[in-house]
Image (cartoon, rainbow, N blue to C red; front, side, top):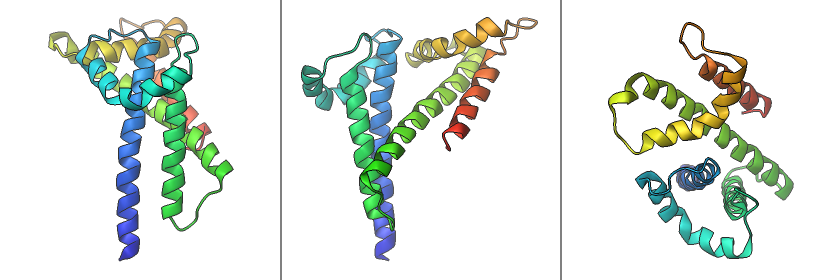
Length: 180
């Protein structure tokens, strides 16, 4: 019975930390694409992620448009999450394995985020014309840099943009490549 309690605790801790890491990742991506930070969704992400980020940003400078402090925070939180989860499990990982798994998990999170964002962009392109929600322009702003290279290679056929299909195939390929 104690094992079930530890598994439940590890699940809860891991899920909450993964959600927070994803919020930081979305903030970094929105900064990268120069999204409108007066958007309520952006304001929410800034408010939620500012407490640990503000002190780090004073110490770690940004590198161009990349918020290096946010990347360091994501890596540290992912390392902590993997380390604690491995300690609660039956086979604890060593520091090197935790570091490798943390980076792999962050990369997988980034790829899965874009996978779902592209699917959302496709659905919104069908029905989003009538909708007025603050998340809609952000979805298109986030997916445009990923879809643009595919659009250059694959022009629309009979007015149908096939670039999202090939982008999703590429993302799935990369996920398989990293073993996810």
